Length: 253
Image: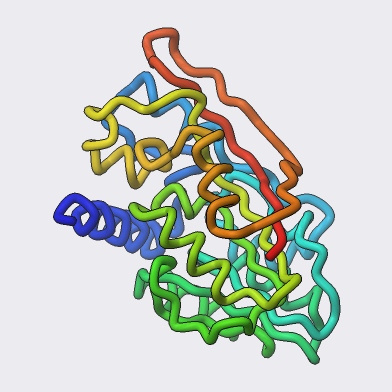
């Protein structure tokens, strides 16, 4: 439990700094890895938003993602969408435009500085059907069976208890609801000494689960129709005893 608390504090502190500076951790110029052989992967994670509102990208993209989940999320007008680890709000704003004025997009984040930045961006962009709530993915302040779509971008790897997070995702989704999550997974098991490195947790490396274990947790949470929409492997130094890749996964309740 102590390690979980330490991980959350390290992540909260790092992303608070990023919000204040307007910089990136899992994207270009990360600098958050204490291991040179693993730092290179942080330079490759950020995925590019294309064919979307440039004003939203300019205002709210901090380069923290490892995919573009809104591109695969099958959102429709009138839906309620929840973004886990919403950061500066880019995916919330894109979702809000997709679901229109009769729908709603909610961003959930545990970092006060990110919430402040996202709410500032909401005012700047004039997107009224976007909301930002404080909370953690393992214990969401969200009503059960109330969400049509859940999206998340390079965040679940930062969560210490992924089984609990996916149980919560299942709880809050409506029957027939779907999630689309972009995340970092490992190919093979990550050594214990890497797991202990709080900088590598904040850098989206140490918290990654083996891909097959990750998919099994999703199935055990009750989800069906799992579909890997996109996979992007990263080239690591030969000295690193595991692989890393980003995936975009869709599944249905």
